[in-house]
Length: 473
Image 1 (cartoon, rainbow, N blue to C red):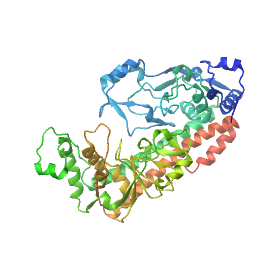
Image 2: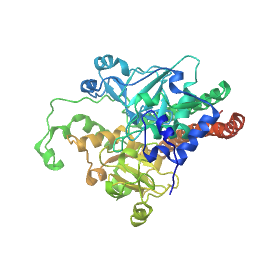
Image 3: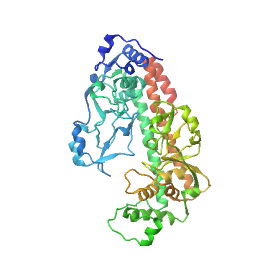
Image 4: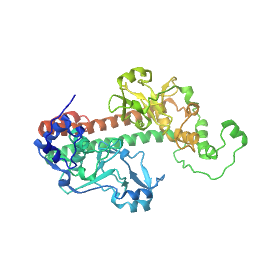
C-alpha cells in the first residue's frame, strides 16, 4: 500500500484544487520535487500559443474522404512520431474552415484525450494538414527551447508524470489546454538540447528510410505481377452471369466489381503459379476475454487496433491468472498474426521470440507449413494491395467488417521464384532493422533526458553517444 501526506496548502497550489489520491502518488510527488530542484519553466513561458481545434460545433463539418487534405487524429501521434500510413482526409473547403486546426512546421503536437493521451511529436512534415480537437498545438517563441527537446521531455517520465497528474476523467481521460500551459519543463543547456534533437532527427530519418525500403519491396511484388501501373476504377455497371452468383453464393453487385477480378486474374495467371492461403499455412483462431477482464497493467491483450505490419502496441492487459488459463493462445516465434475483423488484412510476422501476450478473437495465428514461400514474403503479400482488394471484395457492404475464416482460407497468393522472394525478404529485413534502430534512438533520447535530470548533462551526453555511436553513421 502506498500513501502520501499532503498539506492543505499543497492542494491549494493545484490550479484545479485536486483532492484525489491519484494526483498525489508518492511517485508523482518525487518527480515534482526533482523537477523543482533542477530548475524549470512552464510551457506557457516558452510558447507563443497553445491551441487546438476550436469550437466543437465545427466537428459537424468533418467528413472523411479517400483523398484530400490530411487530418491528424490522436492515433497518428506516438512518442515523437507522426504516423502517416493510415491518415484520414478531409476536403479543401473543410480544411480552410478549420483554420485554428492547421499544423505549422516546428509546432509540438500533444494529444489531449483518449487512449493515446499525452503523446508528443514535432510537426515537420512536407504536407499541409489539420488536426482534430484532441490535439494541442504548441507554437514556441523563437530561440526559447528546441521543439525536439520539448517533445521528448513530454514523452519521458518527468513529462508523463505531470500529464498523468493533470489529466481528468475516467472512461475518457482528457487534458485541457490551460493545464498544458502549466506543465513544467526542466531547463537544459543549448548543447544538450541540440544532442537530443540530433538523436530524434536521426531516428526519424531511419524511420523514413525504413518506409522507403518497405515500399521498394511492395513495388517489386507488383512489378513481378505487372500491376505497378494499375489504377483501379469503381464501375457503375457491368454484366455477370447467374452462374457466377450461384458459384460465389453472393448477389451483391460490389462483390463482382471488375477491379477485384483484375487482381485475382493477375495472380492466377502468374507464370510462377499461385496457391490459396490454407494450402500454405495452418490457421489458429485466438480468443476473446471480455472487457470485464481488462486491467491497466499485466499481460498484454492484443486487439486488432494494436496490430500493424511493423509492430504490436499495448493498450489493454489481463491478469497472470487468466493468461495461464488461456496460454495455448500465446503466439510463437515464426508465426504471423493476421487480422480478420474490424480492420481485416493486417499481418505482423513474429521474427523473434515474442513476449507474453494473448491476441483477441479478431486475430488469427498463421504458421507456414510449406517451403513454397518464406515468412517475410508471405507477410508482405498479406499486407499488400493484392490481399486488401480480396478483403474489400469479401467484406464489402458491412458496417462492422468481418472476414469469415473460409474467406481468409481462400485468399490467393502468388508464388514468386525463390530468388525474387529472397530479394523481397532482404528488403523487408533491412526495413525492419532500420525501424528497430529508430525506435531504440527515440527511447535513448528519453532516457538521456531522464539521466540529465536525475544526474547531470555530462553523464547523459556521454551515455547517449556510447549507446548510439553504431547507429549514428
